[in-house]
Length: 298
Image 1 (cartoon, rainbow, N blue to C red):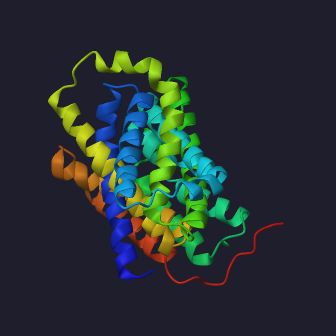
Image 2: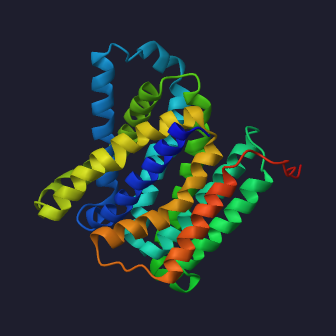
């Protein structure tokens, strides 16, 4: 991985880290599906407008790839965003953070299943080291697999599977298509699906004016939490394997902790520092040049 790709992927995790903190504020005021539809429609309109000005909408290419765009939109926008926000609303932040650390492993399994990648020793070892760090940051004792949180946990597991599938499918598709064009049309397809489920909720969500802190969270969520990260993601997947991009998800608990310490009352302890070291070490090990591969069972 070159230095530019590394910086882009690190920036992606910081943007998603802020989004993780602020989305909880948003879904307490708006319904998760309404917020998912709003951010998807905003991103689609902005990018398609830019493509229109550049005369790069290319409807013929859309028609030729409508099936692939549909699956990308289904996994990456409709299911991923809906499941993530519904999960965040109905479960605890601890549960959500812990379950989402399954994304790198799930992505690697999907990529291996589709025959694009094989599991390497460095990926296997790096994931193990990073997971140890995550468990120190988010101890299993805080995980509450209760009836109260079960539906949220199930939504979050659905989010893991959908996002992992999207990473692999996007990696395949963006190699032969512009990242900007791909992101715009994927969001266009995905926003149509979300709108179909959200239209009845729109009047109810717009009745009560949001507080100032929610408006600020909305502004960031639209631009810094959706538009910019998904563009970075498409560009990163053009240069980097999907499993490598996914491995950086392990950094999110540490990044969220750092952001919480900077902007909220979160306090760093020796355990947090050690856990952060393990997570970064795990990502470093997992992103090294491949060692001999572990054969997958047939």
